Length: 189
Image 1 (cartoon, rainbow, N blue to C red):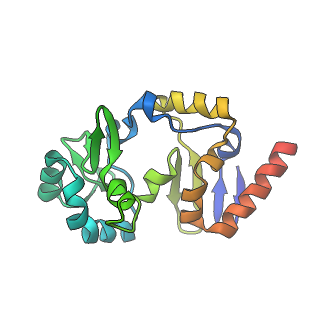
Image 2: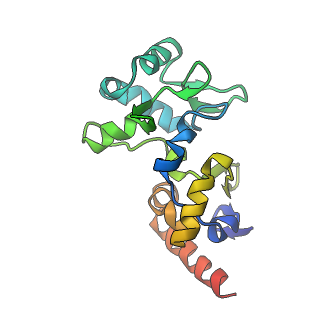
């Protein structure tokens, strides 16, 4: 672990390699698990605001879940999360054949909304836990991502480089530039 500003970072994000391999996993992270995608307070308001624009991109099951439960929910642990369909699929998931995709991201890609998706989804496999004085930045190892780890190793892409855009979105460009310096020092040590 090392500190960068008000973040405590696991060295795994520098050492582990990762590149999403949708052709292998079929977007399992959007349909597996026992909770929705983590959200922050601001994101709950964004979901409420953009839902009418995103709704045409969603499946009928997702729309039904959102209209019954809301655009976001409080999980069993009290954390804010995306709504789930029958405690499984994210309500915002859509399918291209057998591959799960994000309906919000599809609306974003078509210029309908200006918000890509929850930052927790964009950051994956990094998970951030906010505390009063700092944020913990950790690599989340999940067996459904084994193919992403293999592809990352083959392409020699460390986790922090794979999620560069998301890390800049979450912490800012200056923070990311400092992280790159730390990564280079770590690599040469």
